[in-house]
Image (cartoon, rainbow, N blue to C red; front, side, top):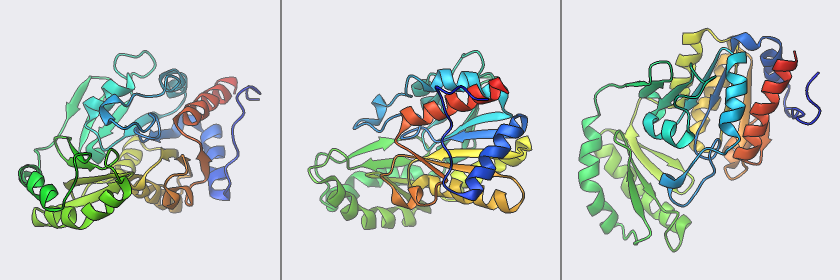
Amino acid sequence: MGNPAHPLPTPSTQAGREGLAALLSRSAGAVIALDFDGTLADIVPDPEQARAHPDVVPALTALAPLVSAVAVITGRPPETAVRFGGFAGVPGLDHLVVLGHYGAERWDAATGEVSAPATDPGVEAVRAELPAVLAEAGAGDGTWTEDKGRAVAVHTRRADDPQATFEALRTPLAGLATRHGLIVEPGRLVLELRPAGMDKGVALEAYVKEVGAGSVLYAGDDLGDLAAYAAVEKLRTEGVPGLLVCSGTEVPELADRADLTLPGPEAVAALLGSLAQRLADG
């Protein structure tokens, strides 16, 4: 019996209901995988001010010991997600993993260390040429870049016309990325130039297979999470039940494929807390 004060929402799809049932009945084999921005932390004008919702760490602390593994999969550097999430040194989160840069880098709570391959030289070339490309495209003062180390992101949220600026930059930034062997990952008023070959789907599928998961829950909010959704759908065909959660409704391409849509990070934290309560109650 779960705590009636924290009821679990019912997924809208049969596959989602089967995924939730598998998680509840065989929690020791479950992987909980979560995006960071927009899923655990509210989207804010300045990404450097993003912080995990206050209910996230308590919910994960309660849930993590009851499942096989918890992973945060993000486009940010893993150290940034760890710092903004408040995940380091938290009892109960001893085996949390943060797969940063779409899985290219990994932080393990057990060691507190980051493992990473060498940086793609195309990123350095893009970093050098980007100011000229933005100037030629007529990007205004409200457009700004975020250096992620292994990627460079161009944000238009502060521009006078954020959506129009976003659309105007798609083609020139795609050309810049292509010249240097990179790809452009679009998001909510952000265009990220990064190396090809790694995405959240690749990272999630590899991690699920690494830990031998029997079920998986993935929660995300943006276009970059579509690859993770596809990975869960593929895993389902291989006999691993999955639950797809969408945080917010701003990205219909994601919301339309979700088994469960929640209003935002506060509701995601509540879901994690309810799962922990249900599993603790047996």
